[in-house]
Length: 328
Ligand code: AHG
Ligand code: MN
Ligand code: MN
Image (cartoon, rainbow, N blue to C red):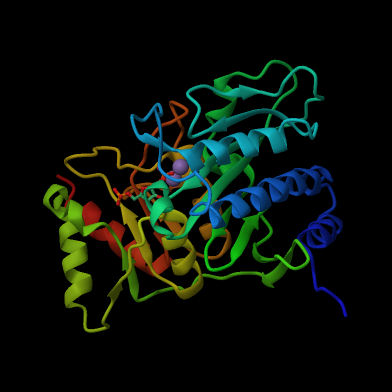
């Protein structure tokens, strides 16, 4: 009995379909898949081993780092550094870029990642994820400046969602494809080929606990959704990857806008907003900071935050119209 289309086979076929795309992706993804399987195993047994809770450290953002954050971070760095396709990496959990150790061959790609997204949900058994973005780099010494590229320069982006099943969703600029891990064979199998986000949805995701800080455009937009006869429903998991993935499949809008408390929003441009924006645009959706396309923002620093309004095209365009109409 055939086990179906594996991620590796799909990547090889995609490579053949698009001449000029190099075999490097297949190798990079193969190492990413290894990391994903290890993180998935640790996330699923977190309650059984002493891996829950805070690590006692905090990161550059001043946020308390969970033990699983650190484990996921280490797992990805170890899985990716020896493959010979990367020159350096940038992680949400590391202040500075990580150069591939001199004892390994270097490649012409850079990997940026949020090793574990949704940390606040880890200890209460709610879905969390990993988000990644891949840039090309020049030969020679890599510096932080090589990472500060607008999202349009990404060559690939994706996420792994550790939910009721473990899924990997990615794009290399030729559509969006979803794979589900079959633990019985240890393979990611094609389950969601060529994902398209509905033009308009009925789900909105925003943390209404922040409504006292909202700027006028946000409040006016959310009020419109609540009074809209079309019965929008509110869904907010608190893990960006989970909220994004549900809206990608069902249609809807996720908002983490700028507000009076967080003038630049909360989410990070390079390894949260840009990769998900690449995916949503490839699936026919839209992603903006309220006034401009996320993928055209020129980054100034590695851990730069950005407001994020992402999802179904018609919903994001409507939210932008409220934002622009109320710009203080
Ligand atoms: P991370 O765990 O990588 O720091 O990301 C958490 C983010 C994102 O996953 C989620 O959408 C957002 O934080 C939730 O923030 P609030 O709890 O402020 O709503
Ligand atoms: Mn995150
Ligand atoms: Mn994180």
